[in-house]
Image (spheres, rainbow, N blue to C red):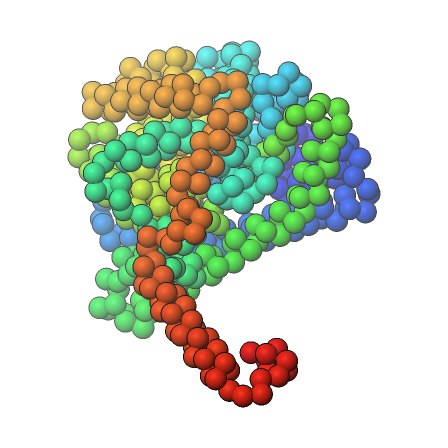
Length: 529
């Protein structure tokens, strides 16, 4: 256990370069290139974490002020993803087994062709332990707990495979998949919702992705400006009431939030490109090695979902969701379906927005609608897990904030796959639920399972990524204007181009007439003409 803990404590910026170097050596990449790739990836993770740290540091005070302005008192406090990670790593009897068997299982599943994803994001193995921790505390069975963890890993790897074509094309991450439990687990749900929105008259015509916004509004629509504007809106919602008593101080906080969000929108995608610069040689080496030994086999490198949060539509959707989540928490509390006050994890909403945005290719309107549905389920599951989370957190010496009766997190509510797998062993928790919350949980279970059934019925269980890729590329081709045909949204540009063509045609004809009527035309004048 001490060895596992030491490796986990290294963090991604140290652990990932070591793993990448070992992989590069295995795939016979030259030592110099392997060292450079490993260091570049480590530096890329440091850069990404710095920008995400800026995101959290900028957004947290604004969301905290927003919560305080509402004056809502719910008895379960969202203490953020660290509580979920603490619960996982505190289950020391399970942790080393999940790491050892999980890595072995991943390699075995690749060997037999079940998955193409090699999950090297070892730090986030705590996601697979999360559901197992509850089962272990309640049942005391190590075998059942390990089985739940490994089954979670098996499901997440399949989801990572299925969504890899979207990750690689839309998020521009070649040969990468994202086996990140609380994000990719919602991909099938997001796909079903997006298909449903296709059938809603009027709503299916609304499209507001960063590219369209930039094309329509010019400089104002650039990601930098969108981040500044949305940051200013969040700042106003949080610090606006303070303008009355302390105008200067409140204005400074609003402007700080605006500039901080603009910086995140501008810088984070560039930091991801640094990491990808280091990953590309390794992915090419892995592909070459595989093709030599296993023709027509692909390998996806499984990484943290942090690589995708820099997409401008993801951040924009997350910022718009902040007030939406607070309103949803209040409304659900009125009907007994929620007791959790969103707080710490409001700053990590970009992670939860990835699969609310991706299927619609960055349509922020659909992203907010889909994200709002996600958040309803997050709140319900988070409330369900609050009693057990609090008990385990206390035993793990996690500090419970003053005034909170129980603790949980939006992140914990996002672990829908571990939650579903652990449900049969959580009978004591289910027995103590009130009727409204029980009904809400049943709706979440039925809804999620139905979405999974529809998703895999459409794309299959064996090689879902191949069908997803075909459908994704086909839809992309349909959206592009036919060759030689002007884009519908640019009639003014086409009209201007037509005018230019007519003008130059008349100018050439006039030049030709003058030349023909002139005497002594030489070869030189012909060449000049």
